[in-house]
Amino acid sequence: MKSYIKNYDLEITTLGAVFIGSGYNTNKKEALFERKQISFIDTKKMFDYLIDKELIRAYQDYILDIKLDLQAFFKNMNIPKEEYEKWITRKIQLADIDEEKGSVEQRGIDMFVRDSRGNVYVPGSSIKGMLRTILVGAYFLKNKDKSNKWGSIVDRELATKKRDSLNKIDSSMKRLMGDIETEVFNRNFYEKTKIENKVNDSFRGLIVSDSENILDKDMCIYQKIDFSISGKETRLPLFRECIRPMTKINFNISIDTKVCPYTINDILEAIELVYKNNKEKFYDSFSCDIKSSDKYLFYLGGGSGFVDKTIIYSLFNKKNAVDYTREWLNKQFHKVKHYKDRIVSPRVIKYTKYQVETYQMGLCKLSKRILS
Image (cartoon, rainbow, N blue to C red; front, side, top):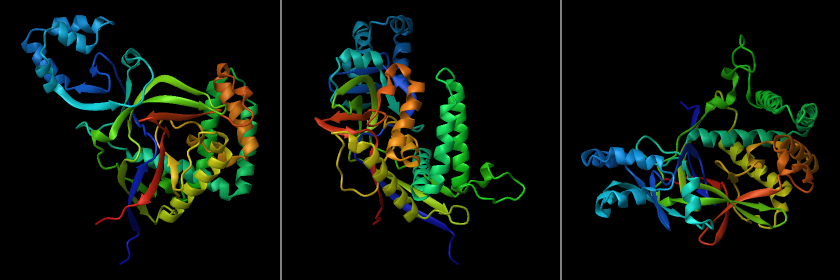
């Protein structure tokens, strides 16, 4: 009997630095900030030692002293290096960072998501969310009548909202995106339910596993860099723990063909189509855009920028996409003066540097895994 569940082992290769945040930021009070790396501490082992040596009160005073870092605390308490080195769980390298050491310490580092055992992994929900956005974008690129219809609705909705009613803008745009996704994905599986009900979402038939664990040696701490259309490079005091470029991320997709209408070839075609569209309409406007001969390219995770997190450049032609994005961003971030955007909007792309080389944030390629 032929199975209606199709399973695929897939592999993502990072071409840039990939960040998926845990929501946790670590700083100089919790880790040892050194010149080329950061050492993370097992706090349970540290506290066992502090309790044994009756240093808890001194530790409380240290926490309240904004000037001291963990290294200074160990030195002041005469804790020998051979002792606290036993508490180090991992050491993560610092990439090319132009800020002073203290800046990294003060700002802290946004940490990558990890499981309960402290292992790095890419959540299946992050990959599935990325694929969902890509499939919506491909739907409009292949159905110009639908893009014209929804483009007019979205454009009209934005025009009616004032800059001082951002909550209303956010609410209306979320509602419109919900309506768009209902049209793209929902099918009348259950007659007594409304079509927008989640049980009618055909995309629930696509199941994406969490990735296999990623080794700490494949992680690095990167600084955010904005690269403008004028060629100006701006390094920002924002630091993230990311997966290094050229790291393999292995995971599995299962497609329930009774529910989900997409095949693996449909997904690959959509990835190719959306990347080509966004490259031509947006990324080619930047002189530092990275050229690649790889076929199935996409952007994964946080910090990769506005364009690939939305469907705007798939929904509109280039001129209208620029106009719409300019108006949307100007209402959201008026002080940034997005109203000046004319050639492309937003007018920066997100980069980082590692060993002198420049990498786009989140850029990846997808391929089928060949299992031995």
